[in-house]
Each structure stands twice: as structure tokens, then as C-alpha cells.
Amino acid sequence: MEATGKLYVYALDTVGGGFTRIATINSGFIGVMGTEFDQDLNNLWVVCDDGCAGRSAVFNVDAVTKKFTSTNMYERPASMPNINNEGFAIAAATECVDNRKPAFWADDANTAGYSLRSGNVPCSNTVMPPPVVPEFPLGALSAAAVTLLALGALWVLRRRNSGVAA
View 1: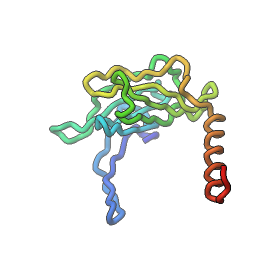
View 2: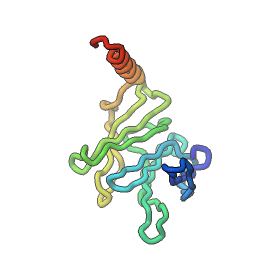
View 3: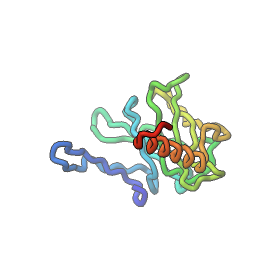
View 4: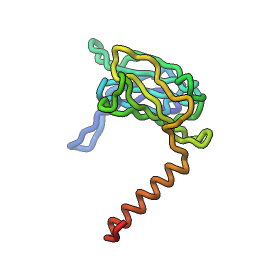
């Protein structure tokens, strides 16, 4: 993915443990750094990092050809710098407000002290404006904060498993 810009789609055999490649998708990017399937809209989001200026694309299965086709291509959000985003996640439709739902970008370079940035994407396929990221990553957590939260959760779980009240 990252080296070719192609996506490889597999069907998993949950009984026998095997797998079968069912599709190879040309993303249109020089590399793919993140994918996210929006199960509410049946959209496959494909995200590139600073090597593609932070662009993303949405793919759907065409009803006639039964193949993945690109339905929308986006420039990176205007307020997001051209950074090394390597991950992308979208909230469920239950989080929609004013036809927008939360989305999250993971920056493995920890640019400006932030490893996560939050914004939003459309909740419907009828109106697909570009993703929005706030000017300042207010919803973002710094790498130190993420580490601190993870260590705190681990501490609580260990105390709980050892029978000591937290």
C-alpha cells in the first residue's frame, strides 16, 4: 500500500482460516498511509500523507460493475498543515450533528506536539464537502497526554486485576 498506492482487498475464511484476494484497487496516490471503512455509508476512505499533500479519496462499490470506484477526491483540510498523517478514523453515524461526524488523523511525527487531530466529515453521501479540521487542534491530544492516559489506564487495570482497590 505505502510503496505502490494500491489497496489489496481480501475475503477472510472464518471457518478454514484462509483468505482470498478479491480486488486490487489503484488509489490514484503514490502511497496509501491510512484506510477507514465508514460502515454507515459504505464508503472506503483512502488517505495519503504529506507525500501527496494530505489528500484523501472516497471509494464505493459500483452497483453495475461491482468494483470499487473513486467517488470523491479531497485536498487536505485547509486548516491542517501538510503533515505526516499515517492513520485515519471516523466516528459512527450516532455521533452526527448538523450532518457532520467526528474524524481523527494520526500524525506519527507528533507535529507541534500533537499526535492526534480531530475534525469532521459529512454524515451523508448526498452532500460531500471536504473534511474540516479546526484551525487549532483543540480536540487533539499531545503524545505525552496519550502516553499518560494509556499508563493511567494500565495502572487501573493492573490494580483491578490484582484485587487492590484503585
